[in-house]
Length: 211
Image (cartoon, rainbow, N blue to C red):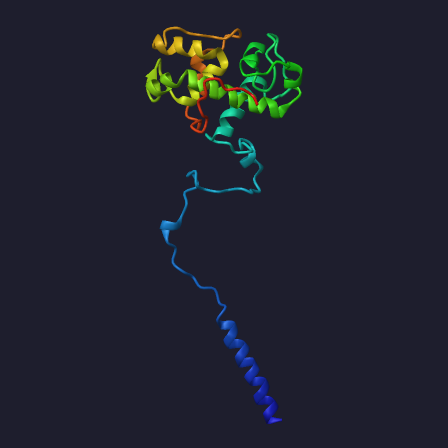
């Protein structure tokens, strides 16, 4: 009987000892590890507050090339591959028939029905325009003209809107010639809205063509 009492007493003492090791430890707070909720590095998603999602843009594309092309696509056609505007420009990036011919596309029906071809055409045209505007990109990149900081991506976007000639006229005139498309959108607007994106991976080719 005494041995049983000693056995159970020992078990109780062992359990009590082990449990003591799991008591919460109140460590001092190191302020260097705090994150201000106003800082951009603060992560709040997923959140139980629906208001946190009102202005959230998904997917995040930032200033990467995918952000550049999707921003232009939204401006041109709201991102619709089947879009045809009142002037006959077609597709997600609103190509004109003559522009398509310049990069080797002669079948506009095939073009508008092929998202893959439209994406390839956009990159090919950027390559062609970059070659034609390379000297302007090298000279004007980083300069401020008519209140707009000139960047490579802005120049390429403006060329997509109004052609390389319009961009050259605007830059050569130091912003005095307000080149616009048929709907009144100016080269200056595209230089501003699409500036600062990553387009360095686009290679400049003189006679870039769809293969």
